[in-house]
Length: 623
Image (cartoon, helix red, strand yellow):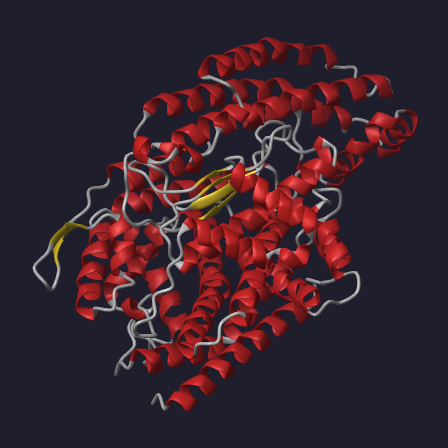
């Protein structure tokens, strides 16, 4: 059985932002409307109090679950009702908090919920051990007797398949209580990095003095002025290095939490504990790392093209975000972005496009950055009876348009799943989640490249797309390799310090970027970059960006080539939620992730883009 409560489907894309206003300066139409969740804080408090009053009623089912099918159904339906409301309660507090992370009111509300949920998990600790006292055939018989149990069949079956990892009732209670301290390292990390870590002051090449916030760094790393990039990179990362011991302790604590839960449930490793319950073969994770390492020459070809276009003697890490096409700046205001995204998604049909337009027009999206707002972007589809929400930090760059398409992919996945599946089967896994988002990015690129004639703009778009291969396929796999390594080190009894993490990360970084072959030079101060990656707190999440990207490339190719039934299969995939295992869902949609074919097709597509870029460069006489 899935653990009850907090099935928030939140998909986070880490990006930093540029200029920031106070929230009250943002137009009403560009801010999400959280009143769709609760009309006021008072309404939220009433709903919270109601659920608190309901929770003790779960005790009435103790000792009765295996007595009759009616008892089992009543218990599961009761828990489902509470779970659905709990997710909605948490969404309201978390998203209000994300509007301004400095406001402690909503953080306090979140903390109160966490205590409530911990108490409830403790109360429900009897459910799984009690069900496992009988044979699966008994439960199977119950399902045949009670039609209402059909929607719980998959979860019940999964429970019995994982019987060896389910503990006794007293042990489950202890483990449930441990959730009170779960996520503390992540919470401290977010608060320190986004709200409390001081930013250095720097002097740029024109003697301008600025405070190097995350948003300012994001702007400067894309500056055409290499001197300013150097100044920004050194100051930004050396500032992180000032707190490497603190960041090391936070990440070490997070890894230990993962290992504690894995060992408590008798898994062989933390990665097994993360992947096995989702029926993701461990071989998929390792084969991704192996395939990427085998195809580093393709990545190095990309870096060589970047060096050629920048016209530098030595490519450095600080050059990777610099504009490679002079006098071309792809800027789009939000209205333009809306039109582009709607047009790009047209191949998916009228219902898809109309719903995206509804999300835009009915304030499902919080568009612009404001002071104190959480950085990055995400889609949260946890409110089953409402609609998904999107947080963005839109700054009019092409990458912001791409981010918008990406997050709308998540939102539409949640929308179709929640619309089509009953609540217990609506929650898809993260393994398939990033397929929907990256699929939209493929459609966006395809639309843009078809509608551009100017060689310089086309070069800029092609390089931006190549940057996507770098960021989604290679960089995320680099992160996945690092994440796997640090968990293995702790499982061997090795403590993680800031210095040790930097050495591990630096070695992997240099391998990927061909530092020793002088393909791209990694300055020593870059080794601390791991401290700025929030995904390392998400328990083996990042590899799924890469695997999903390869899946979405294959599926989008079918749609763009007008393959009969491709759109219908894809929309069925989006509507399937968690009704089947992720590998099966993707296979039904038309891609087999147990083979290397999706990865090979992705590398072929990458090389095709690089061929096109080199053809244009040769035509322009670019050395």
